[in-house]
Amino acid sequence: MNPTTAGAAQETALHLRGILDTALPLELGTEGAPETYTVAAVFSRRVSREEQALIEEPATARLLAERGYPGVELSVADRRLLITNTNLAMLQGGLAREIAELLRGIHERLATERTRKAHELDAWRAAEVERAAAIKAEADRVRFE
View 1: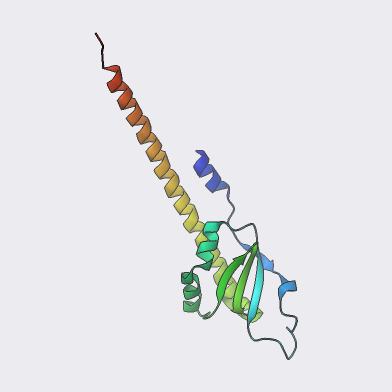
View 2: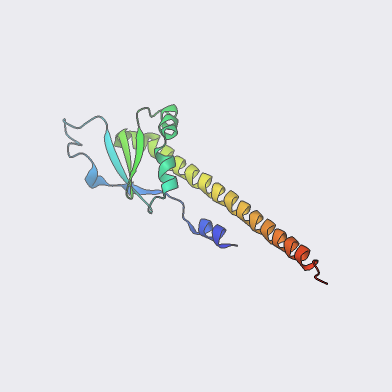
């Protein structure tokens, strides 16, 4: 395994550990509780730039809308996923499962892309070795006699 593929293999899949309950609205459980709000969930590790871009892209909100969660949006804030326009009941009712599936898909997509790039780099290196050997062989055939 080369260093490029070794780094990709070592990265653990991003997942959510749970909800940051201290960030929930104080009015929950009262008559003044909002219908929807932002829920902060804690990531298992720091999110990469590539992961953040895929989590926050407009296609993600469209996908959630198609799956029955219109208006829900995801954004990353440090090691937290901010899930806007939702509530605990929606999360328990299936939204949490959809988000987990989305994160698994992002991990698989990025892992596949890293593997593809590593293979391209390996092929390029092999071609460079061949090219250098061919040039050396040609140079070695030159005689100054």
